[in-house]
Image (tube, rainbow, N blue to C red; front, side, top):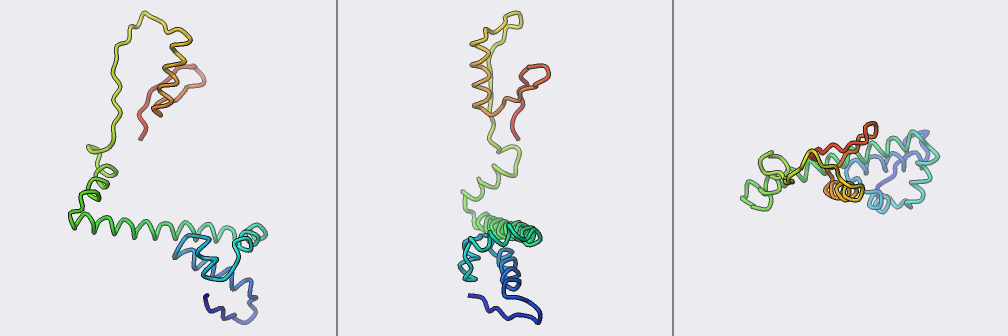
Length: 149
């Protein structure tokens, strides 16, 4: 449990709120923060609901803490790449190099003078939806196929 020395004019609740925000900047997990400080999760959420400024600080602290953890994870990933860890190398390339990203290839023949039946159109839309490639243009009711980035 953290030492909770109050500054003059500061209430215990104000000090606890300050400690919560500081802890979430280090480890952005509410449960761990509450356990470390000896504060119930329900108390933290009650304070967030009652105090908009505190709620904003908590949300910002969680974002800052997440960014810190992301930086640490990326640093470890880079170390693994330096140590020739193939899994790390593949992960990096698939997520940071255009040549190695996962691709979806669709091929087929389309006859332009033939119209799909409503059932066929429904099947095509469902297939595109399942492949996450379908964006429906509501104004023209036409389907545009665009790869997901």
